Image (cartoon, rainbow, N blue to C red):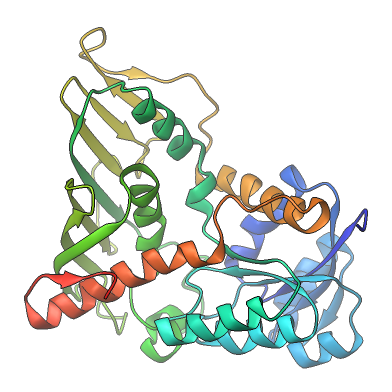
Length: 339
């Protein structure tokens, strides 16, 4: 196998800086050799930092670039055509979540990946979030006894980097395929599935308090897991004043775990020995640390043949959960996730 992975950035918007941070810290054998974006300023900014060659289109990069793999970080509607084009061109592919906005589109991408001998990975950085992994260990160790319920609360403020320009693509349903549930909500749904297994049915409602966004900026849902556990999922993005709240509150028969949050990193364990709560030891910087594991996972899969922490088909769980919540908001009934 090659000793160095030559990688092309396809899309050089706000998420590219997080991927580059993770690459520098966790993937020392990977080098960025191409920066592709329709905006030459964004591509040049990555090129200035990495020495990459600038291209203004994927076609131009595939024809003239020198790279073995791609990291696709574009609006959601471009995921399917770009991923398939790169796989058919013989490139390893790291694709930002969601794989695509529809299950049919995902199936076509997975078919193209199956016909290829290249690595295909869907990037869900919460799979590698230090707080998520530490919580997984606590649950496996029975730190709070048997889990009774989980409350998921993804209340966040709009960040300037993700919503630049007069009409950011995330405001447009045709480009995003949905709102906060399908996009940022996936980061909260993946850990739920890691900890408690597959979500079986949901009932939910969505709202549109942030009028700039065409699709939902508010969502609430009840979740029933195949294991019989019950949880809630709530998300809100709005330019207001928000108080502190953990992203996940997991209640067990002998205690609780509070995981990260808008204003607090880390994992708090509440038990008989520490009823006031004990912060676990660890380096709890912020969610950006999760990209270190993500980039390392992709590099090791390509260069060493190491199995991915989660295969690309795993990401269908977040997408299907979001789509089931959307259906439920219309039918006002419980909807099956894996129908």
